[in-house]
Amino acid sequence: MRLPISVYANRRRQLLQALPANTIALVAAASLQNRNRDTEYAFRQNSDFYYLTGFNEPDAILLLIPGRSEGEAILFCPPRDAAMEIWTGLRAGPEGCVQHFALDQAFNLTELDARLPELLSGKMALYYPMGESAQLDSRIQVWLGQVRAGARQGWQAPEQLVTLSSLVHEMRLFKSSEEVALMQRAADISAQAHCQAMRVCRPGLYEYHLEAEIHYQCQRQGARFQAYSAIVGGGANACILHYIENQAPLLDGDLVLIDAGCELDNYASDITRTFPVNGRFSPEQKALYQLVLKTQEACIAAMAPGVPWNVIHDLSVQHLTEGLVDLGLLQGEVDALIEAEAYKPFYMHRIGHWLGMDVHDVGRYKLQGQWRALEPGMVMTVEPGLYIAPDNLDVEPRWRGIGIRIEDDVLVTTDGHHILTQTVPKQVDEIEALMASGREDQHDSAI
Image 1 (cartoon, rainbow, N blue to C red):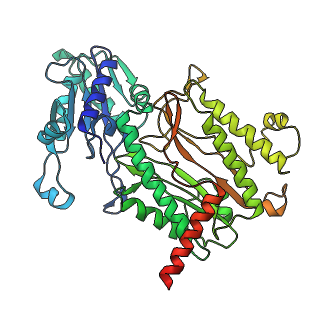
Image 2: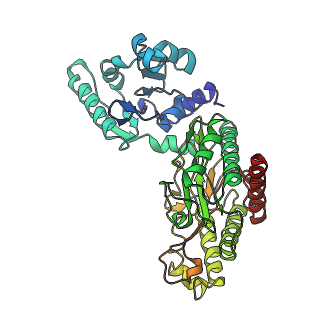
Image 3: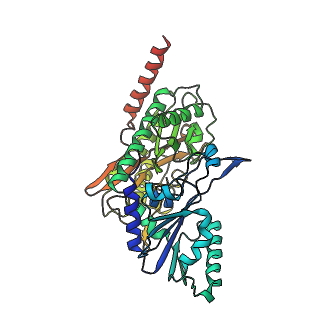
């Protein structure tokens, strides 16, 4: 599943309209990254560049020049190379970029240094993602120096350097119907993977067995890459927020927390579920789990256009603190405990984050110093959690080492919200029933 090329052309037109006259914008593709010696990591395109082009080759440069008669959208791309294509696969080349990616002009990347100074000359401002890549910042200075060196030829370098990111990132924050459909498909694939992990889980497996199930289920449905390194934390490992070792055994009586989501056409999903390794919650696990679930449901219910982002986080703090007092894990008046941030040893992160082409996606959380209001088209995660560290001597031993997080991807709609990841069970009875069905299937297959 991929977005049509017309979507990328429309985005470029929208950005061109936002650029002032007599300016130029530059966006660079990602480069291959060495894994070790002469092998590279799997290529992942720069999100801003892909958002504007749909082009998935390294080292290209996109230029947008409003009002340019010869063409406003220009790409410099790697040339065709028959010998290299035997090893690394076909390249589009300049002709293919114009034909298949709806660009006005395209040139070999080898021509960039010769052509760019002239394209920069006479422009009032250069827009580019300042400060995001030291290598690109350095190249920009070289190109500007070349323009200044041509002063006797009448060349004039841009007098202003302006960050492009704020314009592009504001565009990326609001998802079109095509993007929502793509994110829904990624969420559906990841949801099925989480369900399968619940079905196969049992004591004696290792964390990496469940990670393998997640990867397999996603890849067999066309989502080859995960949006981030999967977290599979059994027992006390669930109290490590970004635990990715995934090497420990899954023990009878423990919970396991899985935070994983696939990426589809560079769009992320992000789901967390926590469930008992043996298929049954203990009383302490169930009490904490129900508190986190109640909190998440209240936060999602509050999501609607016009609601400030931080209201959702504050609501999570209120519910979790009240619940911790009810369970005896905190003592005192709720308002005073919140003021003192007494909840932070148990809940140390925010309620969620924007979601899109990056799992922690771009977009401002504040405008003019104020938390921005939710608007239709935004997608955010809602992921309250409670983490009782194994060495927390302020609580009874029966609570220690329990980590729980529940996370869903939520789209803000014109009349409220829509949960993209709602097909993954999260009610206690639903989880236990799904896990029981998995054990029955394993028993039947063994007969």
